[in-house]
Image (tube, rainbow, N blue to C red; front, side):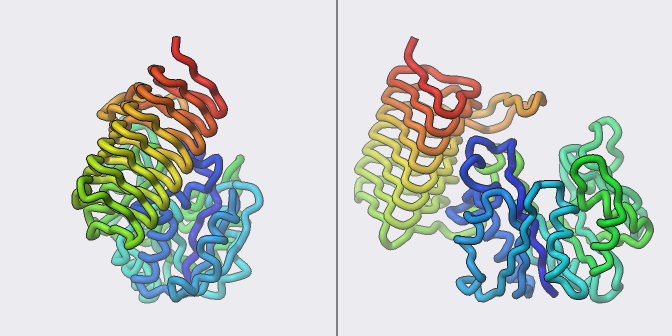
Length: 385
């Protein structure tokens, strides 16, 4: 059974990080998010994949190629315009003959969930979707069940109307007839898979599971999911990483190739350092995702932060971290753990203070001694005073 992996979206809520890469290529434990999805499918017994790509698709295709490095076959379907997950799935039709699994390319699930959906599809021949419980179901597709059928699916309903904690887990077992259903479904604007599945009514069967299910929708999710995945695996240190004997790197950190960690530096749990990252003397990092070629200079303190590719955090700069309230698309998200985001190619000078929840765009410059907060645009130059 083939797997269709939907990986065409941009992830606008994750800008500026997604201005130069598609959301599925954001790093989790020094692996692209999409790679975790691929590995879960492979462990479930799938060896043929169709990646539906679109936004910045060359980043995905150059990384995964034909799948040989993972002992699988990968084909690519292209969604030229992002018109929703239903429309994206339709682009895979030429590659599918019979039953298939559909997966979201930005959600990490346990292989057992994929295996269970495959088994249910084979045994019943019915359309199948995985469902799991979540403490905030209103943020996802809320699924009402009636025994062994899905009664309804509602995307992000008002919290006061939610009567169940089951949500759509983004794993589907479908057949070729699904493509006809997509073509016959009317939609204003983007067409979601869940809209199409409503057409199946009593035929849609749920597979319940309570294992690992991780979603990346916001900046703080990158940190939470990265930390969770590091907790589940042994600490990794590339052989070509250079860690000074007077540096401290605790368990629960991932250190990629050619990383350099100078004397007195401390790397605490939940931190991933990408390839060719340099950490200066006496710097402290905790719960951070640092992308390739970035530099954290001497004495900097960086907590609960995503540092973009080729970015620089200057000497004695402080990104203090902690819980804060963040506004995204007009909605307030309370008590989320986000020290900040430093965009690709952005340079923070020395002795900069970054307030919790700050997002600094790509190619920005923040001069020494500055205090920054809120949202700093791409290419901005921020001066003290």
